[in-house]
Image 1 (spheres, rainbow, N blue to C red):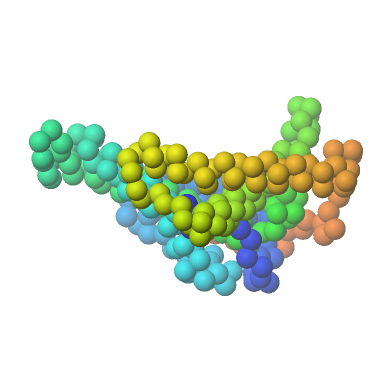
Image 2 (tube, helix red, strand yellow):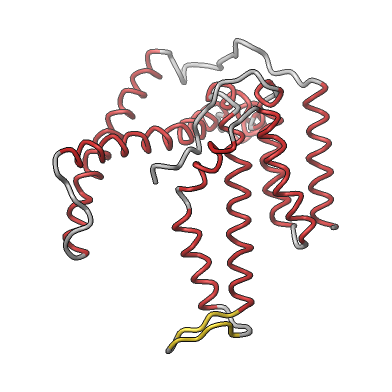
Length: 260
């Protein structure tokens, strides 16, 4: 869990960093749509290359993205195992009442690939966009909700804060774990009940820190008069040539994955 980096921002002045946040959110949504339509190896090859090219343009170190995916390894392996053991098909291995099917294993690998690609694509959004710019972009995209009586600024703020809290809580959990280890805490001794009670030494202080941070955040928002009226940005959102070009390339990639 300490390897999860989704929600972090890596400062930079690359082409991707300077893109309009609305374009980056749209590209992320297009990438998700492309994942749902991919069926062939050529389509998955495009989906694999897409985040690699954007990461190279953003100047992001490959190790950073791999580290961010490492926190989901256990979940991905569990998902692949469940699919291989439960879905019917040609039997590859059998032991007692358990059997691994070829079709189930391939389906599990496809599911895992889609999750990895989506995590990589969505991580690029937060790596290259500050929380403020992301909030401004989301608020602009959700502006039609005003007709329904909803405030797009509040919705965008909640989404941006939720993304930002994920890496903060991960870092906090790591600090608490190191502090408990220095006090002699062990999580690899005893049975499941003992280990579960030992984990309480992490989750209880983590919950306390989360509520404390949320309280400080609410005070900061109130001191800045959030919710008292429409807010403006220091730098207006404007679409440039690079924005339109990458949008066109994203649409072309979606069409290719559906018809490849």
